[in-house]
Length: 301
Image (cartoon, rainbow, N blue to C red; front, side):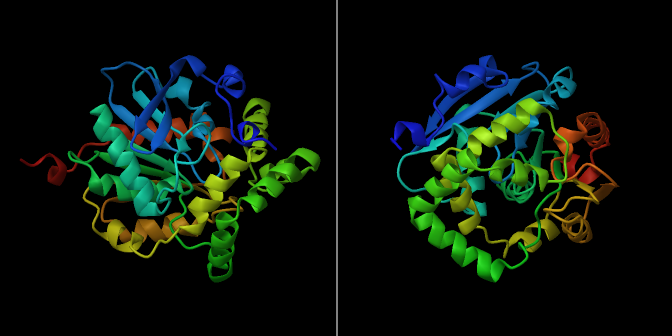
């Protein structure tokens, strides 16, 4: 497999990418970000962060529901999708948040809210603590706030795989030749549209994208997250599906117990990709969170 075929190509793969015309490429240090902007420039800015192994495309069904009222910023996380890294990068929780902080700084943007799905949930919390001014809201959708079950085995394995590019290439080859990609999508417990499912399959066939996901999992350490949640000064809305087979709703229950200004919203169905399987429901909860009065502690001074 050639180097060119190891990663997504904007001229080829990007030709049919959702909302292609809204895409920008922004270089910050050794990282070139793929970012999409949607909605009115004067609207409240919402930063949307996808989870491990996904890309910004996972928000595509929410975009048309939110753009009448909000400005949306949707990046591909480092090593994912079309966001590329020259050399090594810190793909830890703190490293991802720091890289996003640098991106926002270069663009001169301060989000009113940060929304994260799955692994994007903890990143949103870390990032919120770095930003000045801080966002008014943080929202998590099926957030991964607890260590992965079996982490003592998984983390060393992920680190070993990340150190060697061959497993990523082998995984990508398997998704081309077997039903692996479809099986992984089925394991989310979510019904998503064909376009999004096809994009997930395309991502899983790209060794560079798989390597980025492995790197993120290898560096995943939630040791400081509980303290960050206890210290949060802005409201935290936690949305979770009880039937999520990948990130149990106990993750969101745990976060709700720690964050001082938390609201827990549970739904019986939707699976891990709840924001894709039922975007109208999730949009309603986002709008409720955005409309809630700002606590006095936030507006003081």
